[in-house]
Length: 63
Image (cartoon, rainbow, N blue to C red; front, side, top):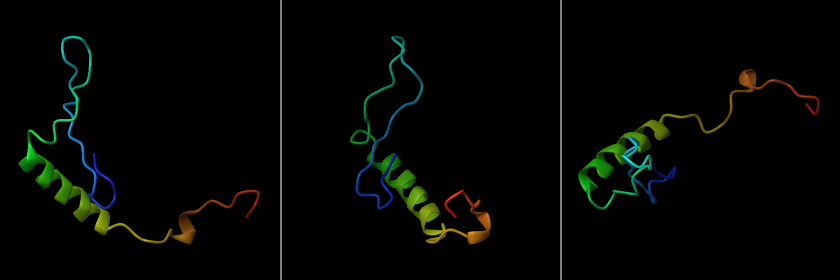
């Protein structure tokens, strides 16, 4: 997980352990994985529009 600007990151193993708990943040143990995934997320985010397409917004009762 990362913020939109990549300043805060967390890395979790989403497979529950034997107790059924999700692992704690493991970003410090796997910095190379964090770097790769953060780059992927930020590269994707950079391709997203900055303004909503007006044709994709359903008019509501306040529109």
